[in-house]
Image (tube, rainbow, N blue to C red):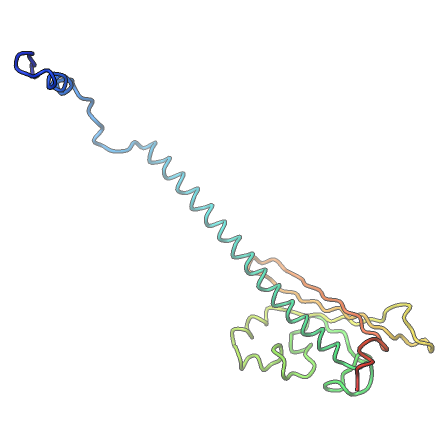
Length: 196
């Protein structure tokens, strides 16, 4: 131990020498304790698991939104194709008109496309984009055509149809999703006045 005398040190250095002469607390050279390490591991595991869960929910939401948008576009295109058909006659593609429009259950996109050309949902899409064609194969479609009750002409023949189009698919989370569009078509409705 070092002895400090008043005679050998100046007054300002005397206080420093006293502090230096005090015994120091030795630090633990081994590092962190096991409890500190366990707490750090638990916090890190919680942060990582929360991040992974959040990413999974985000990817699932993106997949649902993307498929809903695609199904909406396809169903809207089908509704527009149906609106272009005449009530009767052979003016439509492949002789199809509203009077002979049939129900389709669990069909593919090509089964609901009338003329198979000039539409993005037709078979020609495989030539355009194989990735888009693969994405569209996950969808199944239904078409339901029924007469609207109480809507008949003077001869008692139904003159209004209710057409329901349904798209179904399974998301990346394994849950099934459904989107449904309904439209009405009247024999002497607005579109009948514009046919030529």
